Image 1 (cartoon, rainbow, N blue to C red):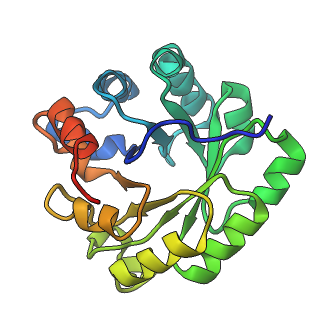
Image 2: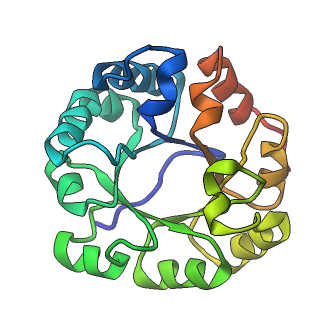
Length: 218
């Protein structure tokens, strides 16, 4: 059976970066990240992309294993950044970058049951990811953000709308997503929103997630 995203929209996609968590913990130890992710799962996040690129494969797998029971119970999808082998070992999905193996190659190696997301930064990449068999794409940066400056200027809402209209798989907006602009992304056709800092910096994570789920973006 092919993997699918069964959660209602808008989808809330949390990307991890424990090095941004110094505000919550002076030492961004993996346990601090585990505690934060358990709280995010309890608050209602739909997808988590475990993106700790400085950690070893063993350490990433340990974090995935630590939150697996919570994620399964809540119906939260866990994805491992780039490493389909770790994802398979964790019983998780994988999120592919533009430098990762293609979704087609991952399918061939690991089968249809693995949930596959893909990062895309323009319509050509979006089409390619969908054609290769990704279950959803993350598209951006939609808005101005320092963390995505390497990819050039923001793609903007018009390109997001075009991608959402073009593809039959969910398109999740990324890049500069904040509480004051996320409705613009959803109105442009995004099936959900992805972020790092918006979630890490939230004083009331459950309240933020509730607000997103209740967004009037039609």
